[in-house]
Each structure stands twice: as structure tokens, then as C-alpha cells.
Length: 232
Image (tube, rainbow, N blue to C red; front, side, top):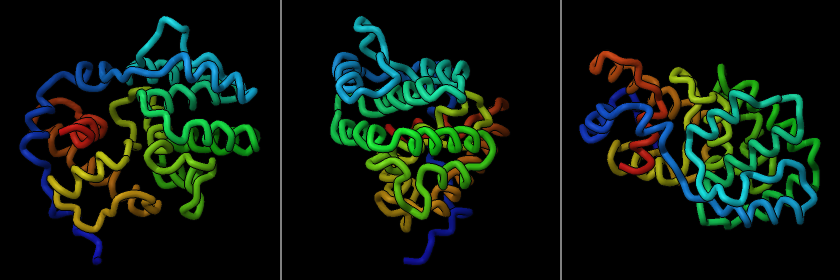
């Protein structure tokens, strides 16, 4: 299938209407229940650093919580990098824990390689989506086993600590389904996207965000569009 001409795609009206709501409500306040006890126990059982993901009384995480993590992250600390990863995975997984034990095992099998990939990705994420994506998906393979595009792009996204001009956005199966069905990106595919597709995706959201910024008279972040694509 020939690549879809993204310059012809228009933002659905329903998304434009959603953008009228405050960013703090739709983005920072986007909260997901997490399996705190499971995460803390499994990380400890794997003898990995970064636990606990939260104290036992914390049963949910918001995007705002992860923005704060990224803002205070000491990227030179392997333990802090892995705790950041666990918390991003906990938020992204919610109560669906499939594959997370395998992701932990992949990190445990080669922690230095995993930390190096994370460090490179987080450093690049604020400026270069292609380089950042390649750090976690070199040559279209996972740098950390079982950490595919859906979760690696969450890491890239949260690395921006909530900056409205952060260039990396989450791309997962739900976002992709909306892009195909509601926005008519016919050639997108369902998963395992190459770097070139992720770059095109971020550029499309950036164009839409700039157009809506002019329309609404405030700066629209690409994550505000991703939020609607995730759950229109």
C-alpha cells in the first residue's frame, strides 16, 4: 500500500471540540489505576532496582505524576532511570499486566544495556523523535525485549516532563486505530512501526497542533491531540 499523503488529513471536528477543555484537566489529570502491590513484589522478586513504584496506599498514577518524575529525574542514576521505567509501565499497563514480568526479566538479563538505551532515549526525546525512537527501537527491533512501540513511545513522551512543546508523543494500538478509522491514515498499520512512521506521526500531530493553536489562541501540545486519539 502506498503511504498515505498526511498533508491531506484533517483533524476531526470532535477532536477540535475536545481541545477547548483545559490542558490541565485533559492531560495532567489523566489518571490510571495501577497494580501497586504487584509491581513492588515483582520488582523485588527479580532483584531489580527501582522499587517501590509507589507506596502501598497509592493505587493510581496520573500523567502529572510522571511529569514530576521526569522533571526530578537524575539521569546518571541507574536506579532512578529504572524506577521511572517501572512507573511509566505501571501507568501504561493499568491493571493489564501481560508481558511486564517478561520486560523485567529482559532488564534483569542485561541491566547495563537497558539503562544505556533508556539514557540515550531520554536525552534525545526532547529534541529528536527519530533519534529517541531509534534508541529504543534500533533497526526496528526492541532494545529491551518486549518493550515495543506502544510502551517505548510512552517513555519518550514522559521524558518531556509535560512541556507543551515536547516533540514526542505516544503511539499505541488505540491511537493507531483512531488514526486509521477517524482520520483516514490508511497505510499506518497496526503495530511494529518503523522509525520513519513514528517521525511522520509526530510531524502530523505537530501540524495539527499548530493549526489549532492559531484557531484557539493558545499553545496546543501534540499530546492534547494524542489524548483524543487514544480515547475519542
